[in-house]
Image (tube, rainbow, N blue to C red; front, top):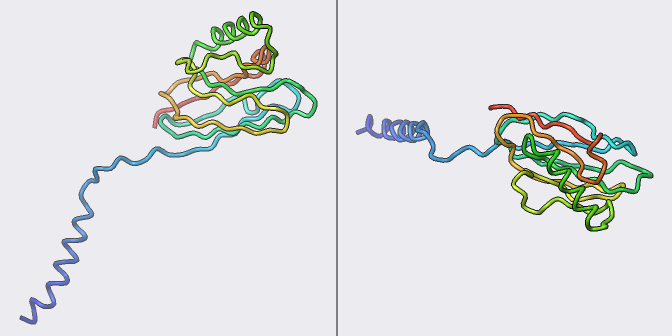
Length: 161
């Protein structure tokens, strides 16, 4: 009896330890990353012009407007490859046709070509947007304010895990 009394706790410990060795049915959560892009002061450029991320990553992108004197309101838009020029042309055409100001976004809401976009921001403001990094590839990002994308553009490079 004494032998069994000493063995019971050892057997129970072994069973509990082995129970943790099986595979879990839960899926590990996607990694999180914070990316930062800013306007280059009053110059119409993004810093940096290239960002890197792993596919499936949950991304929070922050975008401060670092200008001191520029009046226009920029934004940050991430698009599907090969769609930036068409998006900008459509946005510029809508702006011309509406007589709207350059501080109005003319991108269509829920456009499937747009992966993520911030709101337009005034100088000194900061905004952010969250999205899941798409499939591996190079994705253009740009400012949709009329005329800004000529120089306010960059690439999000997405790699495989």
